[in-house]
Amino acid sequence: MLKKQIRCIPWLAIASLMASACTQQPPKEEKPSGLKNMAPPSIADQVFENLDKEPNDTMLQATDITLSGDELHFTGQLTSGDTDTWRIKAKSGTIVDIVVTPQNFDVITDFSPTDKESARRVYDEHASGEENLTNLRLTPQGGYLTIRGRNTENVEYNVSIVRILARGDEIIEQEPNEDLASAQPIWTDRELNATLNPSDDVDYFKLNQTKPSILTCDFGSSTVIFKVLQNNKAIYQIESIPGEPVRTPPLQSANALYARIESLTPTQEATRYRCRLTALDTIPNEIEPNDTPETAQKIADTADDVEFSFLSPNDIDVFRITTPTDKAHRYTARIEAPEDVSATLNILSVKGTPLVQPTGARACLFGTDHGQDMLLRIAHAPTNKTYPLNYRLHLSRFEADKTEAEPNNATTQSTAIMPGTPLQGFIFPENDIDFYRVDIPSTATATSGRLEVSTSSGYISRLNIRLQDAAGFEITRAESQQASRPIKLSFDAPAGTYYIAVSGEGDQCLKPYTLNVSYTPNEVLPAEASPGAQLPQNPDAPPSAAAALPTPSNGVPTVAPAPSQPAAPTPSDAPTPSTPTEEVNIDLLLQAAAGSTPQKDAKPTAVTQESPTTDKPAPQPAPTVLPEEDEDAF
Image (tube, rainbow, N blue to C red):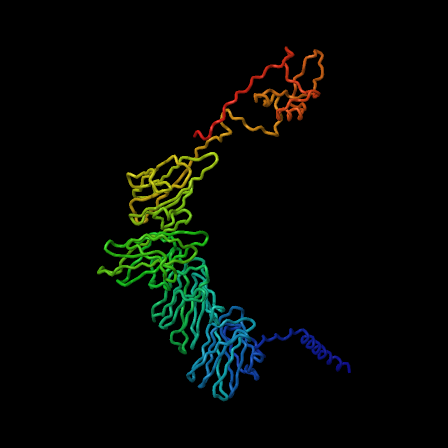
């Protein structure tokens, strides 16, 4: 009996240890969502089978698949009229290519980022062909892949999902991007990796740029229609040539710019292409084509001394400038071409309407528009010279309020100039005359002054200036004896209107001249301030000790005693002179000013200041009264 009990103890202990070990085991790891009964492999590739569980015909019934590696592969089955829907999840921002490979039948493959967006549809017209959905954007919420068959029963298909890995400077296209609202933004100095899917795919990209940039695209052997849009209108359009890259002119605009890319002849094969938006530190030289307002090359509005060329006898170059909007500006544009090349330069609106009349070869055009784009159209007469023919463009900008306003070739068109405010002008063409108007107002203290007119030495040719009165008669003139020498004239000018005419030798707008006008009034004293005239009294000032007041008898002023209170007697009984703080008898002064004598019973309360040595007041001399000037005598 004891032996049996001893033998049972080890078995009980072993059972107890096994039960304890079972209770201490960790719970089984929960499988990821969508991968039922299957743990994700540790390798990059994921291969799943038997995931097609019916029903999965709608987005609400979709089977979840999570991409945790770089690739994912699974199979599905279709019956007649069947539809399979898969919701594919991945880390936010993941871009993938999806390839659906049917076995000897046609399928229709759709992909939609959400269950509310219209799906992108790709249809395979050929049997046994693969369906390629490229550059699709996945999120943790999932995108919906829908696969349908045509006239098929109990067939199988394979699905491969491959993550697209981008380099550090690469942007991967993200579908859908088929309109302006869904356009994918791209930035300067980064390469875009994109694909035109089969059928009628259209790609839109928003150009995010902070400085002038050029967009270059390589479409390989494919032919596409490439457009740059502004406000949904094409400002640049070209049909690509197989094997040649497309390069836009410099692009810069205050409004958003978009690139639109579409296959010229849609096919079932995907077209891979690459684009790069390159920022420009400086505006490059000419970029063809730039023959029309739509393809005009954009250049800086201060592109001075830039070289371009005529590629053929019929070549026309059109350039586009944008004027600042902060204030009005004016421009000079001049071209330098070979002596025997007849070149013309015109200023046009963006619609091609002339803004300035043509002025011929080596023209100087003075623009007045601001806050909008203008076009510079440059053409030439065909020649037998060897092409390309090089020429140079000089474009300068000036503030409108500091330059002349053309036309100003007559007094009726004169540019107003204020004394102390210099203006810049140009003598173009050689017989050009610039008229300026200066108005000198008359004031109470000055009816004339010294008017001085001068020009700076910045102008490289000889100048002449003439001063005319309001009727057009010449008053005086000054001429420069040498080029680039300042000239000056002056005139004692009464108040009125004067005209300044500037002429000289034209210099094709290489440098402007600066006109300076100054006016110094001849200040005179008013008539009331002339010597001998009586100045008005200040009513607020205290009366003096002796105020001269007229009497009614002869008009000769007498001396009114300064009022004062009786001084307190001193031990020596000497009278104390009055002080300015003593009270004044206002009634006595008013009566004296009115020319009346005080009544007999009125007793004066003020006495004149007496000398300490006499009781009699010191006689006051009568002031000298000068006769008034007769204004009509002058």
